[in-house]
Length: 154
Length: 471
Image (cartoon, rainbow over all chains, first blue to last red):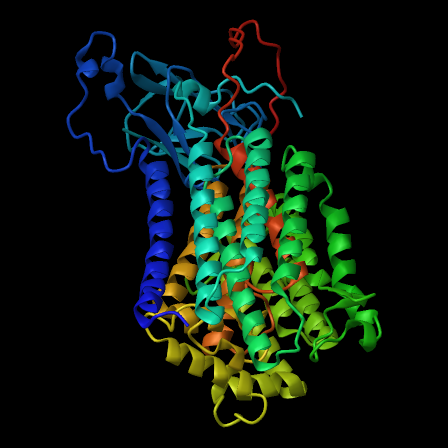
């Protein structure tokens, strides 16, 4: 039989190993949530941000669904317009009887986002206002389409 | 279905999504290391020497996970990197504990030749084979929704088979949930679970608007109309039938719980949870009054020590085991987990608790938690509604099963006879759960995959074909 001390090493060593696995798993979860390498906090913006032509980055960065069946879905904003509707090729595919197949569009014009209604049946609402022509959307303002509500976050 | 995502968010973002396959491989290596360490500790503690079988086992299990990893790398390159390592750790730890219990059996009866760990390893191999098959054959999870009603039928048939078979072919320890043919015994209910989750997801995607919107407000709660109660009543009846004809509390609870929670996720109406709870309470009360075996379980749960010589023996022994384990456990091979009847399958959590202590058992629970969290996260980021519901349903099935089993083992809930996913001895459960994880891996691949980079420019509004706007 093995000496007592070895047994104790086995006993605690194995528990340590198990928890190290969990630690490693959590690092992956964390990296997934915050992007990039875990443990690095970049409170100082990188130099490149000051370079000309990159100032657009200061606008809203994500579109978040805050209500409806798709709640929690996040879309990272880029240069291209975002199409919302029931059609399969929309950026955000709604499964909602109150949405039209091409319902609304969000477009980026030099860092600012405008919402347009694409002739939907039930309309698009920015705050409480029905969207007729293109309207400027500021971060945090709710856009309503059927049961779904969206907002921009920076 | 037209395929032409022109403005996919992830393409627009211009960010290359990391595949994280290297992370997965490293974590798999870690899981194999833990598995082999556990086996070595068991051998050293109980027999004082390492066996040559350990080397064979090491090569086999490493090959198994390597194959699984390579298949994920090839066929689901963007899949979540944590799903497979968590499964690998749980399966490996389960194998070590089963091996430990084999050795205990041999110490009691030197002539005993029955070893369950190698059998479990064969089942794990079969499980990985099915995992591979699912990933290779099922290239898009949305394909499953087309077979929803077929799968529902398959699920129901699988559920019903043990009930109609004669008891000699289907009954083990009082529960009629088996098919026993030629020395093999399988639990079709484990596979039925997956088929039914797929069906629930497809069905609820179709019908959720009706179930969510038509409602009346009563005392601050959105109550559905009477006629919309149909589906939940059917699910309830089904689980009651399982309880009556198969005498299996576990499957019955699992089935009903999954349906109610998926209904809740699909409709976002808390009232469904309350209705489900009320139906469950009613069903449980009737079952308690009518069926002897339910009464027995509940009595043994309320006071296991009063029935120590009978139905409470198992739970009482399990509680003693957990108490002996304490915070840090007795060490692998240091306890007497074989004192609990059926420690290999139903009560493996108690063996883990005794030998690894509270810290070990909590670690195992957290690994399950990570697995479930990855499933739910997949459900959040996948773009189609069917995938969302399916991933959430599968993840919840794992969580619910772990909760019910651990509740039974620790005396929180009455005993149910479900198995701890991946950990416990039992072929059907292991193989079925591998299929479940394969589907999750497939969905997570779809969820994290960036859209094709070369997006054709959209035609200007004036050039676009006129379109009939549907309401």
